[in-house]
Amino acid sequence: MVACPICDKPVKEANINRHIDTECNDFIDEPTPPPTQASGAKAKSSKAATFFTPASKRSVSFKDEHTGPESSPLGPTRLGSTQTAALRPPPSTAPPPTNGVKRRLEDDETTVRAEAKPELPPPTAKKQKNSHAPLAERMRPQSLDDVAGQELVGPNGVLRNLIVTDRVPSMILWGGPGTGKTTIARLIAQTAGTRFVEINSTSSGVAECKKLFAEAKNELGLTGRKTIIFCDEIHRFSKSQQDVFLGPVEAGQVTLIGATTENPSFKVVNALLSRCRTFTLAKLTDDHVYGILRRALAHEVPGLPTPSPSPSAEDKQASGPSASEPSIHLLANDDFALLHYLAAFADGDARTGLNLLELALDLCQKPATTAEEIKKSLTQTLVYDRAGDQHYDTISAFHKSVRGSNPDAALYYLARMLCSGEDPLYIARRMVVIASEDVGLADNSMLSLATAAYSAAEKIGMPECRINLGHCAVALSLAPKSTRAYRGLKSAYSALKEPGVAGLPVPIHLRNAPTKLMKELGYGKEYKYNPDYVDGRVVQDYLPEKLEGRAFLESNDLGAGVDPEVAELDEQVRIAQAYEPTEEDMLLNPDGD
Image (cartoon, one colour):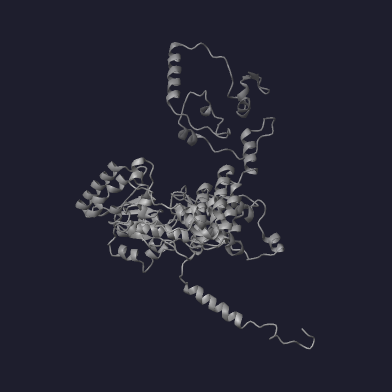
């Protein structure tokens, strides 16, 4: 409680300015007499009404406070916020009096607001409904014409013709990641106007599949509308899950579209595969991925200016962005060189390319970002599945490169497998096989080297054992080749498939005679021990009687076939050497040069 400096009346400290603004008439804190029973009831009723009546929103300033008695919280009348605002007179615009009265608080706050009123930012554009989705999902093609790099759905594609004529069969879409399998399946359902259901192996069991089949049968019977069931990653479905599709697919109750990145010949049961058509999706080229990235960039950053291909330093200083501006222009510099880099980085995977572009767009929001910083921020995922086709395809390419005496290709595939996390012992075991299968009798020391490389890889481990594996791979590639032993073994295996050959009796003189009875039967009796004879030469039969004179081991190290391309190449080399001038054919000038 304080005393007013003008009227010397008691006023609460919080209300002193309001008291002075009302010319010392209101906000006086005078003692009140004891309340009577009636007044107590009235006050109680007033408090209850105040409690159940929502209060009007209070402003930060006191501009809406009126100096009249009806605006006082101690006034006898309580009005709604709308009525109070209607009864209040407009604020006076006359200058405050100078007769010693304190300046009104409203005038100060109005002046401050007028002088320093912040500018509101422009309204932002309304976000799209799927703005939270990844860029790859937002840029999914909406028609078959937008699908890039797949001739199957092109103007003259086989699959497009089936879709247009409403003869969509059950099918398996086989292709690498990011080639458009899911997109094509959704567009098939959209174009054909059918009911579309997506399932996957993790959340769809046999019971749920049977429920979908019943719904599809009812839908077909009531409305005549077909149902397409899209099984993403169908190679992950178990055998029982795949078997449940056999009946409905064969009866035409549902149209199955399965997508897989693995070879369906090994991952899809034969019964289901025979009821579906297999379509192979081609791997996207860098140009296809680049076109997809250009379309996505135009969608995300409309009106992106294209700088000159190679601006000079003065142009960069004069027109280049400041350090506080985003670096979106990097994506368009040098004829979209960064987009070409991302397209090559994606390695035919459109989804990976769009994810990389989305990452680059986020990095470009940071001021003063350079293209080199964006490239360093990208992490490349090597496409290699140790349990899939890439596993077998890559080791097969490595083996055939060593067999073909091409050390460069052998080192490439070796590095590719090791960088992708392949077990080094698996590669070492294959090189032990190569040492006998392909090098063989031409250089017997290669088997010892390959065995030593396996032992080194087992004891040392990665990353150092890569050096031992590289040493062995190059030595095997450069070594002479001989498949005599390997081809002889294959010939013996082939002979065993002939009728009666596998059960031919062993000649009696070659049999083992560990017991007295066997010796009495003549086992090993007429055997000639070769070390007892000069040079170990004896006349003795070793093969069963039916196979006498049969030869399995050939005399030549390699085959006798001639590659026509090699013959043509040799002829070209011979002609080039025939026309090459010799020292005798060269004419000397007067200086003797």
